[in-house]
Length: 184
Image (cartoon, rainbow, N blue to C red; front, side, top):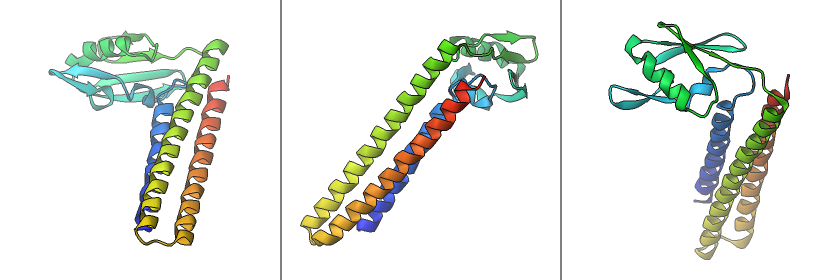
């Protein structure tokens, strides 16, 4: 039973790190990446649909994204969705494709992005600590139901090791993203 608690806690911590990576991939770091449009949804036949499911998104160079819808009638809806989104880019529509030019980031914008990155990182750390707390509470309940105190303590130490590893992974991810943002 304690093994399944530890395994579950470790898997949940890994998922928290994965969610952090997804959140950070949608941050604009001055370089074109299709992940910028991951959260953008356009209305398509009455349903909100992610742009990535409506079009092919390519990056011909480091500062340009080209969105080519599979259905030409959805071009206007995709353009509107990008305008409404919080990515801060203005699309240009030539009738066949939508182009997004990504301007270089200002120093002030870079600092704002680093703050946002750290906020996401702190949220991930809080999630990891909550997972640790839940797992340790479950281990302590087992201690009341017959697991020895030494064994319980050993399992709690294992959970703490998972937590320390996960927090270190979050720090690595944040450092890499901050370095990417601060690159000129």
